[in-house]
Length: 480
Ligand SMILES: Nc1ncnc2c1ncn2[C@@H]1O[C@H](COP(=O)(O)OP(=O)(O)O)[C@@H](O)[C@H]1O
Ligand SMILES: [Mg+2]
Image 1 (cartoon, rainbow, N blue to C red):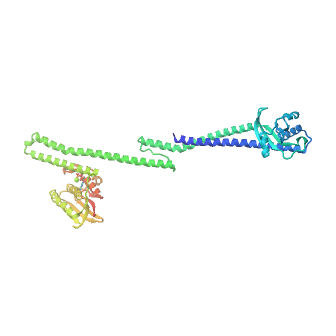
Image 2 (cartoon, rainbow, N blue to C red; image 1 turned 60 degrees about the vertical axis):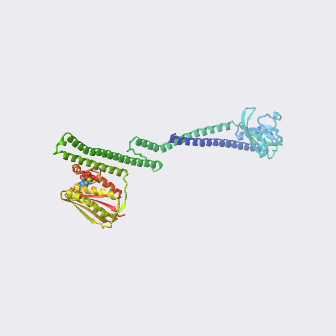
Image 3 (cartoon, protein in one colour; image 1 turned 180 degrees about the vertical axis):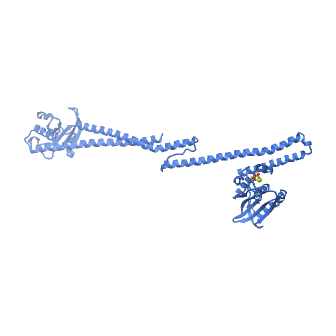
C-alpha cells in the first residue's frame, strides 16, 4: 500500500470517529437541553396556573384554562388537576360532567416521579390521539382556596412533543451535514499533507530508479533538512562514491588489458627471432661456417631475454597478487653494498663505465629489510645506470645516514630522462627509448619491480634527472 494511502486512510478513520462521536454527543445534548427547557417552561406555566387558582377563586376551570393558554402562548397546552388519591379533579380536554369517568392517574410515571421528588416528566404516545406528548407533573405545596380544588395534590401540564421532535430532527440533519463537510475538509487536507510528505519520497524513488538504470550522473534534488532531505543527501553521496569506484574499476580494467597486450607482444618478439634463426639454419645455413655460429648465439641471446622477461613477469605477478613473501631481517649496510659493488665492478668495466663506491655509513650501521629483494632493487638500478650511460661514463653507488634511516642512491652520468617521462618510468613496460632498452636486454619491468619492493619496505623511490647529464635514484631504509 502506498504511504499516501496509509496516511490518508488513517486520518479519515480518526476523523470519522471524532466527527461521528461529536455528532452523536451534540444531538443527544441538544435533545436533552430542549426537553429540559420545555419541562422548565411547563413548570413555570404550572406555577402560573396555581397562582391564578390561589388569587381568584371565582373563576371557572374553563376560563382558567383559556387564560393560561393565552399567557403561556402555548396552543395545545393541556392542564390536568389531580388529587392525592390520583383522581382527576379537572382536565382541559375533558368536559366537566364526564370528569368522574376519567381513569385514576396515580400510576402515570410523571405523577409517580412528582410524588417522590416534587416534579416529574414523561414522554409517551397518547393512545386516543396517536401522538407523542410530553407530560410534566408537579406537586402542589399549598392548596388553593377554590372549593373545587381543596384536595388538589398534583398539577399536570402536557404538550404535543412533535414540535420538539421536529426541532431535534432539524438539529440532527444540520449536525450530519456539518459532519460530512468537516469530514470532506479533513480528507482534502490529509490528501494534501500526505502528498507533501510523500512527494520528496517519490522523487527519491525516481532518482534511485534512474541510477539503477545506469545514469550515474542522476542526483536527487531534495533539499530539505528533515529526514527525507538527509536521506537524499546520503543517497547522492553514495552515488558519487559509486561513480568514483566504477571509474577506478574501469581504469584498472583498462590497465590490466593493456598489460596483457604488452605481455603477449613482449613474449612474441624473442620467440619469433629464435624461430627465424632456427629456420634459416635448418634450411641450409647450418652448413655455412661463416654464419651458423653467430645465428645460434643470437638465438641463445633471444632465449635469455625470454627467460629474464618470464622471470620479471613472475616477480611482478607475485608482488601484485601479494603472493611474494618478504623476510625482513637486520643486516649490515656496508657489507651488503660492498658485495653488490664487487659483483658489478667487472660488468661495468666491460661496458666502459666506471663504478665508484661512496660509503658514508660505518661498518656497524645496520638496516632492516629483505636482503634478497633489496639486492634485486640495486641490480635493477645499477643495470639501468650502466645501460643508459655514456661511453666512459660514471656510476656512483652510495650510502648515507639520514634522520631515522639510511639512504642508498645510484647516480649516473648518463643520458638522463626527459621531464615528461619521469613520472611514468615506474609503470610496467614503460620505456623512454624502447629500441635502446630492448637492444640492451631490458624487459621494461625493472623499475616497476623496484617500486613495489621499496613500497613493501614502507618507503619510496625518488628520481632526479637532467637530460644529457644523468640521473640519480634514491630510497631510504629504516635502521630498525
Ligand atoms: N638511469 C637511467 N637513465 C636514463 N633512463 C633510465 C634510467 N633508468 C631507467 N630509465 C628509463 O626508464 C625506462 C624503464 O626502466 P626499466 O623499468 O628498468 O626498464 P628497462 O630498463 O627494461 O627498459 C627505461 O627503458 C629507460 O628509458
Ligand atoms: Mg631496467
